[in-house]
Image (cartoon, rainbow, N blue to C red; front, side, top):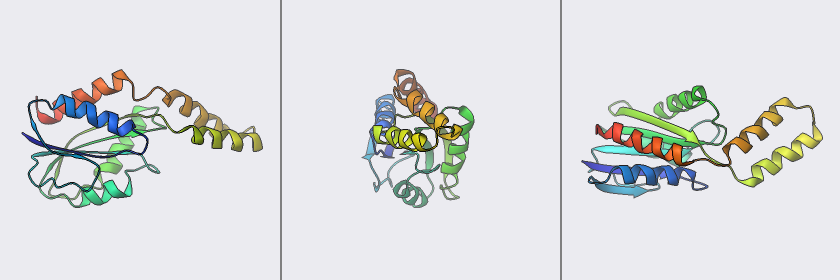
Length: 168
């Protein structure tokens, strides 16, 4: 099978997931690998992944997805605030909404990804100004929970996702 793995990764989290997917695709021809834009005309299956930007995929990934025609697509991504499967399900639906009709989304996978320290610093500063802000406290907890992700379990799940999408 000819496979494309196209991803947008700001901090390296989504790139780690893309690499786990690539390793799981061993024995198949990788016709494209890296950030958009990529030529995926020859791909029979397109893995498309992005970090979460304001609750959806990045603008460059959105543009890439909207340019797909007649492809089998497997969507993946990472999210700093991904602390529940419910949130990942919502992300999957938002990412799917960017894939035009005429393509088939065969599978989705999302996992938590660590965020830059500057994010925590910003929340700490805001919390000093508003020490009773429960939302900021929750955001700091989510930041701390994400520090070790994607971890080995996340990457193993990404590999399983890839094998499932390929029908292996």
